Image 1 (tube, rainbow, N blue to C red):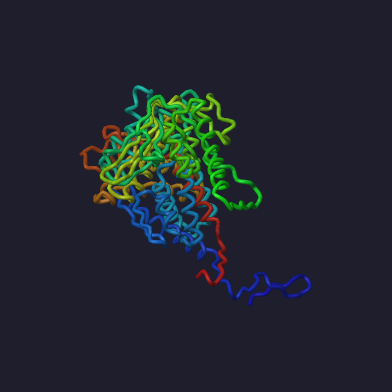
Image 2: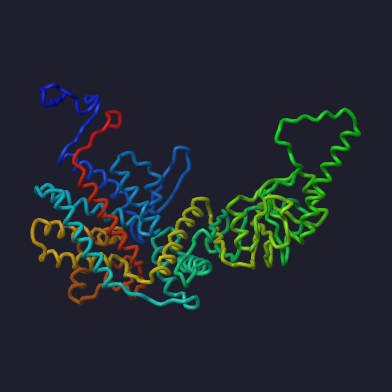
Length: 536
């Protein structure tokens, strides 16, 4: 056991139960950390780009997820290693902030660590490497701003937005329908966007999925789709100019808060109880009729008697509607959520042009469409697909496309994709390295080499010769001074990403470089790892 001594020569233990802990120090710790992070990056490397492979993950309870989305893969992987968890957090923060580029950010971080390992082996101090990376990241981000383009779009000219969303969807399993899905995503975002404030609330876009049908049946509904049907099969299936009462109170007689017991010892008393219950229901239904409601949407259930009365009084009703859906219905129809029948007034009713029930296929699956609402700032993207996994992956792909459209409304600057931005930044950082004195020059050059990791992975995943392809494009960029040249993944016979219409958002690409650099700096600064032995 290692002991330390105080100024009086008395021994004391630095680490409690030291023999039960393992400890890695200095270069050994840094190499172990870099190895763990590189292992995570290597898993995602093959998922990058339009020809990237999908990963199949099975959870403990047997649920299977097939995905190409970096954040989803890392979430489901259950990484144990603490440095591996940092990479998961990196991907998650890119997903929260930008929504797209979750795979690219991890691949970039992995490439930076790979280059850092070579520098550490040469004896360069990790802090000098981290400082060099910081300088190089600033140069790269400044260069991105120089090569970016801003484009104009409006609610009538949405084509630029659609093309950028198509780039995002081209790497997903849904790429055969990317034009349709990109258009749906852009229209949904523009429907809820506040273009004056350049703000988009994605909570107003509900993404609903149903197994069955084909991907091409996916549609955008200017209103709300609820996975419920009318509470009674004989209620009307289509209501025009609906006035909707949105209730969070149950259709049932009030229950006393205290424990109670009713003794019924005669038929008269039972009849009296039944009559009292019926009267309660009658009053509730009549209250809804009196304020002019033609449809009741209730958060809770109601028993058969209430259901029967509602049907006889000609008041269609929907029960067991979730709280989030109720809020969206209230926003869309301009109604108010009513917690007590006594508070129901005509002003609190929501209004919708058409409420209709739609059946699907040969099954008894039905859904409720609430359309032509008073306030159309709440929309639903309704996804169809052959299997549950397909529907779930389409939902994730649509989320990425929605985030890209939102980012473009906030900041309409773009850079060209296909690795062209990374190659241009790599050339700029390499040129700037010669002007930087000291050891940091090596780190800046290493950063430039690491930026080539993304285009190289794109070429590799597309079945091209990675080194030949990358060097050819790089030489062409320097010769023509054209920063739009990238990897021709789809074999269109042109390297110009401007002609191929492959765009990425500027803020997304900047965020990728900055986040990857921050995480790499954090990993390089760790020089002592103390682990309880049971985790080894």
